[in-house]
Amino acid sequence: MIISKITRQKELNDRYNIFTMKQGKDVYAFSVDEAVLVKYQLRKGMELDSLLLNQIQYTDEIRKGYHTAVRYLAKVKRTEMEVRTHLSAKMENDSLVSEVMTKLTDMKFIDDEDYAFSYVRTQRNTTTKGPEAIKRELKEKGIRMELIDRAMEELSYEDQVLAAQKIVVKFLAGKNKDSKKILMQKLDQTLVRKGYTADIIQEVKRMPEILEMDTDELETVRIHGEKARRKYAKYTGYEFTQKMKQFLYRKGFSMDLIEQYLDEIEREI
Image 1 (cartoon, rainbow, N blue to C red):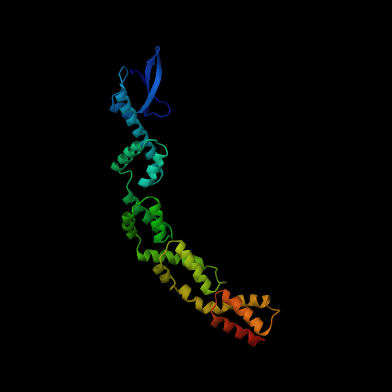
Image 2 (cartoon, rainbow, N blue to C red):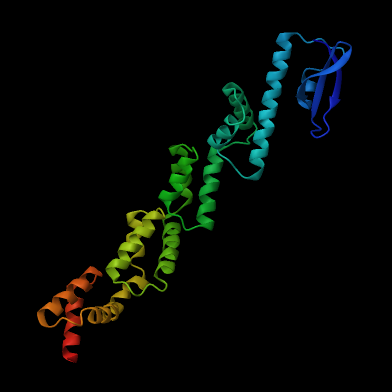
């Protein structure tokens, strides 16, 4: 084919429409990126054989993929896997995707190592996520374990303890109606869900806020005990005592505390 006319697109100033002559009229043939136009020195009157035309169109597809990726990366940092997945959804040819990925990597638009370190620092500074949660998220984003392990060095033991302590303080606020045993079970579950390991969990359980709970435990038993007394008011003697013990034990209180509470109410009678 012979190029009969070249015009700049109105909406995309970096793309050009290529025309060829058919039956005495300029007919649209294809469009190319400005960089492709310059690279192949496309001009009016130039003849394109099928081989050259295929090369031009292949190069242009790479340019379109590159621009698609750059727009995707403009909003936020992305991993190699995220960008590849995005491009694969928009480009049918895997070899084109690979070409674009190579170009992006060479130009440092994609850097999984930098992404991993930056991600860990951001999570450390802005969230209370534990190390296992952060590792899991990085893995889901396609980061290699080798890079994840190195990046996790940004999260020190002290950082983890401080973040976990914030969770504990928030968790305990207003939660004074459960036994310490039940509270600790729930706290364990919360910290595990947030991605904390057993050593950090045990460390924060030595916080004063938790150690002081032992002195308030009897008062908590009394609160639950009063509910149980109303519930089992129709029972007396041994049957009443057993019902009370079963109720309070299910709430997580120790038998020593239960016996202490039952002695109290027995003295009242």
